[in-house]
Image 1 (cartoon, one colour):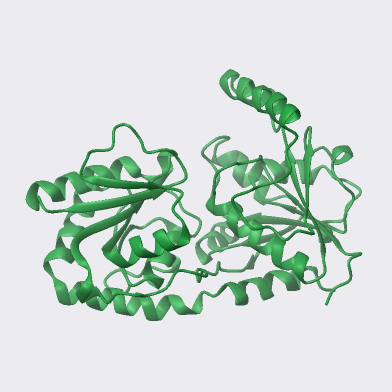
Image 2: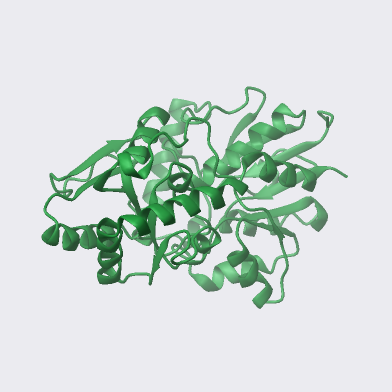
Length: 360
């Protein structure tokens, strides 16, 4: 067990009051490190790249800075963080605002730019935890530049590793664990509603929810009994049709029931560094239809563990869903093979690899 004197600071890009996939991974590692005796701090800034932000983002940042200043934040409530973790709220991630530590972990492209400017911290004490190609706000050039900073990089998929290697960089590969307490196989495929398709809803365009809806609408024209169940952190979107059931921030019991009641899981993302929900769906025995974005391919092999379609190709997505509905043996084979394959992605294994980064 490591002594408390080893202090690890995770630099977060902002504070969220709703569940976020990438944050869950960071919080999981942080909590386990804390329970193993490390001194862990989570640092949340109010302002990042303020001058480069558009007016609407500047107004948002100013609003939340004042809002949380009055509210006096205590930390996230949607994840069971270890009680010994310190949640620190700062003006920005400039080094003078951040607690002194033995190791610093950048968790997003913006945070890496700040960490790169901690000039008195040696590169061996800086880590950049890369979970995606985060080009949706600042562009790909900004992302690639951050990957070239002199710090140790950690990636969550072989796809991300290959992208870094293409630009002459290297990284430690630690694939996410997808096993999650409370999510497990209850119903065999034969006991599920063949016409029920499950999907994650997210506001970001890169999650491809518009594509998913269009594909489901195509399927429903051919199969009027099609039923879809969606879940997400946000409120139910007003434009969602009545035939789609939506659950906001489901409990783990509700989520497990949704996975186990659904024959098919649809993942229409345009960009994923890994794709935790695909792994969860496989763990719960769903047959998966997903896009060929790099992160999904860590778990999904076409016609072996999933049906993989081109990103943005709504027609191919719909055809894959129809194929799984109509071909029972294919659906059962893919679900069974995926269930066996996904078992190797364990949280314990991932954590042990992550912890070794800080053990000298």
